[in-house]
Amino acid sequence: GVCADGEQHRHYADTGSGDGDYLQRLLIEYHAAEYTDAPRRGRIEQDHRFRLQSCSATIRPMDRRFLQALLADVARGALAPADAAEQLSRLPVTNLGFAQLDTHRALRTGLPEVIFGPGKTPAQIRDIARELLAGPGSPILVTRTNREVFDSILDVAPDAKLHERSGTIVLRASHDSPRGVVAVVAAGTSDLPIAEEAIATAESLALKVDEIFDVGIAGVHRILAVEDRLRSADAVIVVAGMDGALPGVVAGLTPAPVVAVPTSVGYGASFGGLAALLTMLNACAPGISIVNIDNGFGAAVVVARILGGAS
Image 1 (spheres, helix red, strand yellow):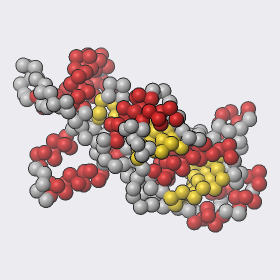
Image 2 (tube, helix red, strand yellow):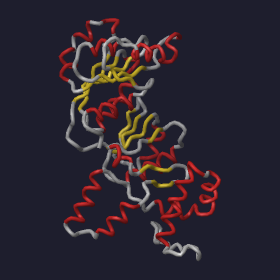
Image 3 (tube, one colour):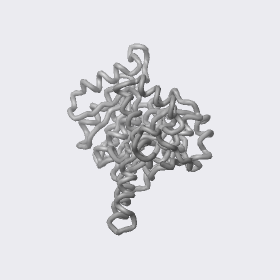
Image 4 (cartoon, one colour):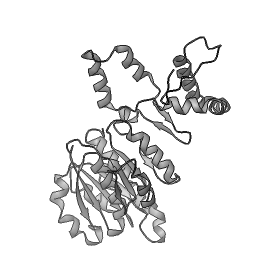
């Protein structure tokens, strides 16, 4: 089999099959061993690291549009069925050694793998970004990161955009027509970093955003003054810390689905957002979905799925 580096890798004499079959079986055994035989996986990685890394690079990231284009090529005779089968048969993983990228996630879920920044070095994030950008045109994000990382990836993603307040980098956004309007409501100015993460994510997923800020229940007339905007939205994300009561109020004003994001904003007894989370879980208004503390990204993905997928 010829891998991305162009080198011809020879199979062992006892495999009884061609190089491509051997390498395919090697990859299958390697990934299967993750859950069944960790020592075996380690031995495979030690003995065949070069093969795994170079051959995994040939696995083409895939989303629904790429798959449709592939099948269309077969239908019009531009691609032989055997060649299409070869592309589809590749394992949906690109092995970078320190990370295994799920390159078929967009095909399965509508949203490709997102890079969670904490714990990764700028070089690691850059390498992951380069691999993901080599795939189809689905949205790609880096969350919870900083300007140092942003500066380090500009050579592989010159069109990237940094939302500095939330530490969100949009490497590539969807070019689809807006699939709906989501109102992103922040109870207070201190909640804006989390609200910005939700906004950046929603916009990258082809959602039009209506920003409504500083309308917490300490001055309830402020949220009542924007009731028309809440009712006209297709979905509402409500970001609130302190007592976390705002989502219940909003859910009583609009027929749109409400996704609540508790934040870690507050004094000691807020317990880093736990008080707000418990308030939202016990909201009197029915039909509120709640994500984890400070998870603006997750809230936007929930809305994208509600409004028709994230591809």
